[in-house]
Amino acid sequence: METQQQLDDFQARIDAGEKIEPKDWMPERYREQIIRMGSQHAHSEIVGMLPEGNWISRAPSLKRKLVLLAKVQDEAGHGLYLYSAIETLGVRRSELIDQYLYGNAKYSSIFNYPTLSYADVCVIGWLVDGAAIVNQTKLAHSSYGPYARANLRICKEESFHKKQGYEMVAKLAEGTPAQRKMVQSAVDRFWWPTLMMFGPNDSNSPNSAELLKWQVKLNTNDELRQHFVDRVVMEAEAVGLTLPDPDLKFNEETGHWEFGEIPWDEFWDVVKGNGVMNRERIKSRRKAHEDGAWVREAAQAYARKKNLSREKAS
Amino acid sequence: MSENNEKDWPLWEVFYQPKNGKPYEHAGSLHASDAENALQNARDVYARRNEGIGIWVVPSDQITASTPEDMGSFFDPASDKPYRHPQFYSVPRAVKKRS
Ligand SMILES: [Fe+2]
Ligand SMILES: [Fe+2]
Image (cartoon, rainbow over all chains, first blue to last red; front, side, top):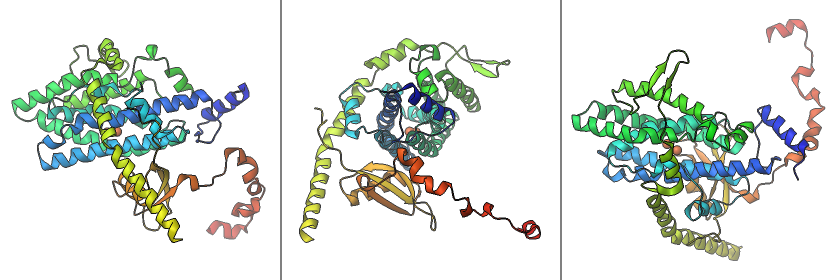
């Protein structure tokens, strides 16, 4: 049983800005929330490799192939940092992976959109990684120590992801008419799904209050989204691209860019599994996992054999 | 099919030395089948950008750690010995100015 005293002491630690470490006392609900949010984050990094991985062999030059390969490898790393942070709460890696391959664990719906052209990959770097940076920079101050540290490590790598994307976006935007068209089309398709990455509006986000109270996250969805929009509007202008929102306008009083209504029906539809790529993504991940089973087993068998011969020798 | 009962590879804690002369730091953990595999994975997961010039991997279950409940009593002996700190001592004024 959790006593009120324990809960109050815990809250006092949070309010004092202390980090919670794996063996510290914590409310069961806090533990659940970290596992839920952190593993969703981890799954997203792993699934996030697919839309871009799809273009590694078709990137336009050796340089761009190398860049994309390095970026996608980083995303695998991000997934692993996060899984290892979540495992400190006593949940097993295989359990987490099982929940998303065969259960109903969620990952960011942005990765359920297809990448139709190479420009999509560039725009993903610019917008999707750009949005991820806004989120993760804040999560690096999350109250759960291992999760905060994993995010800090991630942040050190993300600026390369965004910069390589924005650089390519700028190149395409000043390229041939066909290239301009291609990159504008990518922006048109990814703009709204990127804004959805920050999650539902605050008025519609049931987990938010608890997450904020415990400083698992430090800003509301709408605050982070606004922060992102304010930045991207300037970046789009700088390369002469149009964001597909006729309601986008600067509010002199607030100093923020106001934007139109996000198509939430589409968001919930994709969350429910009806996006263009939902089935395909899970299918690819399952196949990769299952095709790799023999490697995992072989490595384990090899380790056992080595242990045995070492024991014999001694 | 689900592989829920498949056992995870053992867990390892990873430490790296960021630069020559610096102490090793904890990076995080990873799963690996054996020590050699753990070292290679540690390089790929935690040192893709020369974060370290040396890596240690230690089986996580081999680490003995203090517990948060210990915190008070375990570290107590240090808290009533201010004479272990230089601030405990006074120095003639003339000397103080120069340091
Ligand atoms: Fe990432
Ligand atoms: Fe990224």
